[in-house]
Image (cartoon, rainbow, N blue to C red; front, side, top):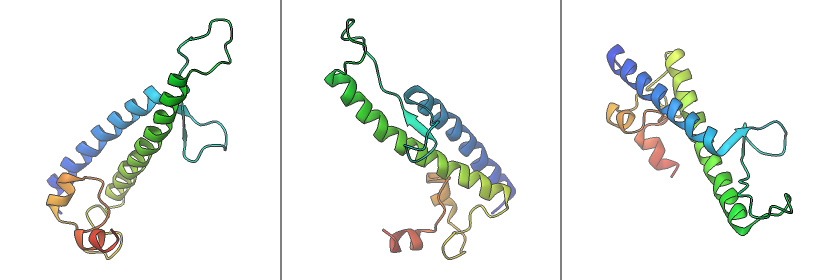
Length: 126
């Protein structure tokens, strides 16, 4: 891999990290307990449906919370993959398949800068 390509991928990964973090911040907060896998906890929306009872949960709140939990997990997983790719750049291991050690095609990395396996290994584990 040439240096310019790696710098281009690093820029893309940094931008993706910023975007994912921004999205995560809108629907989740840093997890302060051990009750949720990962480092973020989905926010429970409060639409103020029942002014007399703060503890009431509307169906819309429960439904939106359910979506927030799912999306938080997906975004967190993507952010972890981006951070891992940035770490591989730092360690001079970017672009090498973590499974077989072969070089990952630049076309694959352009399509998915956080890819950690070559297409052969990705197909074998699909």
